[in-house]
Length: 141
View 1 (spheres, rainbow, N blue to C red):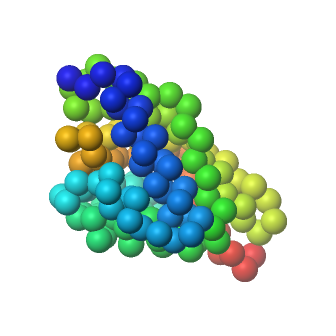
View 2: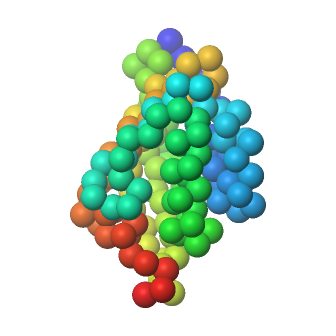
View 3: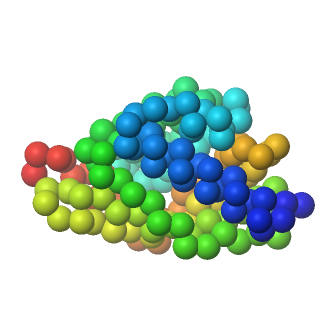
């Protein structure tokens, strides 16, 4: 079973790597924190919804999300819940600037960790309709 400190370290590495990806577009740090067989699941009907398998697909998804957000996507980790073996639940708020205003949402990310890396992520938005709306809005609005 993972300790909370071990889980927080992996999640913080992931969030830091994603922040770098959204800033300068460098995927190397993200690749370093994902397993080769990573599976990433995003529910809903927005342009980012779907299931992504393998590092290349997951990085492409993250880059597409960066493009939709025009580089303004920021994650705010609130808490990491452990005690479920190799699975952790991460409460995270997100924000993005769309058409001149900041939009915010909350999710629970259910992560399966393996060997200090992320092997799977399932996002669970608190408000699916709002989440879909945020990610469906076009930059030109």
